[in-house]
Amino acid sequence: MAYTYDYKRKLVSVEEALARIKSDDCIVCALGAAEPNGLLEQLHTIAERVTNVAVCTCLPMRPFKWFMEPAMRGHFEHHAWFFSANIRKAAAEAHTSTYVPNHLHSAAFDRNLYRRPTVFIGSCTPPDRHGYVSLAFSVVYERELLEAADLVILEINDQVPYTWGDTIIHLDMVDHLIDHSMPPFELPSPEIEARDRLIGGFIAEHIEDESTLQLGIGGIPNAVAGALMGKKGMAIHTEMLTDGMVDLFEAGVVTRAPRSMDKGLMRGKMVAAFALGTKKLYGFLDRNPGLALMRGSWVNDPYVIAHNRRQVSINTTLEVDLTGQVCSESIGHRQYSGTGGQSDTAIGAQMSEGGKSFIALYSTAEVKQPDGSRRTISKIAATLTPGAAVTLHRSNVDFIVTEYGAVRLRGAPINARARMLISIAHPDFRASLQEEAEKLGYL
Ligand code: COA
Image 1 (cartoon, rainbow, N blue to C red):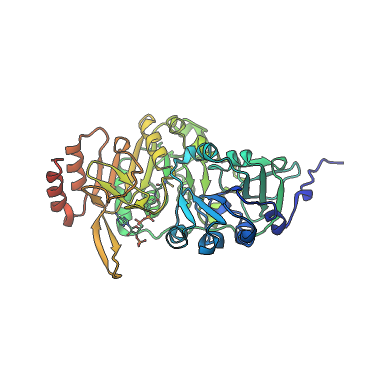
Image 2: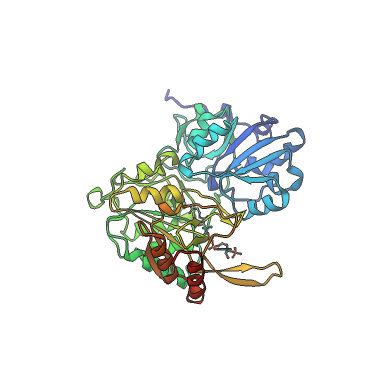
């Protein structure tokens, strides 16, 4: 009789799985679309019998009660590697959530140093007959922390894609399984505005054929993907795989033919640590041998990225000062998002032969005032807002791009940086920036 792995003996209900969680546990939860929705929806129901349970997440997609409700304080403490609108609200109002500073490539290693997980929760595909499953969407930190945890609980979701790479694990590594079928969370591509197209065009001018791409999150990277439609022989080595990259593949811009691709690592494959987007992307991922989802500690290690030739990194930011300090994760002291892999990918790209890194931003932002009105500010500022977190150090900055142009700060002295940045600021703010730069002694 053919060998078949008996996974059914591991099946439990959500309630039975939650019964295994106890006070002082440290739970690590899979990222984004890989989150185990059945468990996270019910986690708050054990609040009365547990205290001091740490739950470590990255981009949870829904407003779960265990961190949104003030009554959960003391029962659960939410450690977030990346803030979203829900977590910003929870941190400000329910005081349940706190940010974990990190670089994506070292998040798993650093977490183990601080506090080893006792429980790992995530989701996976149904098993094959040998008992292997795919973690589907993400191995940013999941693989290492699943291996480090005492108790591993996965939800089997028959609606998630089967992806290849470090996502494949054997069910011998898992203690409990829960049947939980549901459509995976989708992140629609943001609308592309006219200024996104301008920025995309400025960046595309500096990107050569046969480059390897990393594109970040948001409207600007999406517009860059659109602006690259005329390029040839491009490859992908990125932290996050997006719908824009599928468009580039379908248009023949990204190719898997190894000879036409000058990529140094994993020729012929698109490489990423996680995927987030729409059904179109998820359909593309499913059983696609042209893709490899590899652990974040490898994909985003700057020394690994450096092995690709002409690696290009494109990310966005909230604020840049006139010396080139880049703040992409906080508005003043208020945590807005996270470092993610911005610093990893920018540094890795500059270490690669012929590589370039781009930080793109709109020249202005409309900032909400306490009375509800909006005030226009320049996102290129003489000094960062007090409390701002520096995401990319000024010694690691390369190109900065707004809808007024692209300037290359790498290697340039402070006076030249200030002049270049003023030249791509919104025209309404150039005179005041010039005045402040002179006062600060930059010019
Ligand atoms: N001062 C005050 N408020 C500002 C601001 C500034 N300098 N710049 C932007 N804002 C406000 C905007 O007005 C907007 O407010 P709203 O939500 O009330 O409209 C909000 O901040 C978000 O700005 P926006 O430009 O729309 O951000 P985004 O959604 O495109 O995200 C980042 C941009 C930088 C937050 C995001 O790319 C990020 O978190 N990056 C860091 C991580 C990273 O790059 N990882 C690697 C790739 S995955």
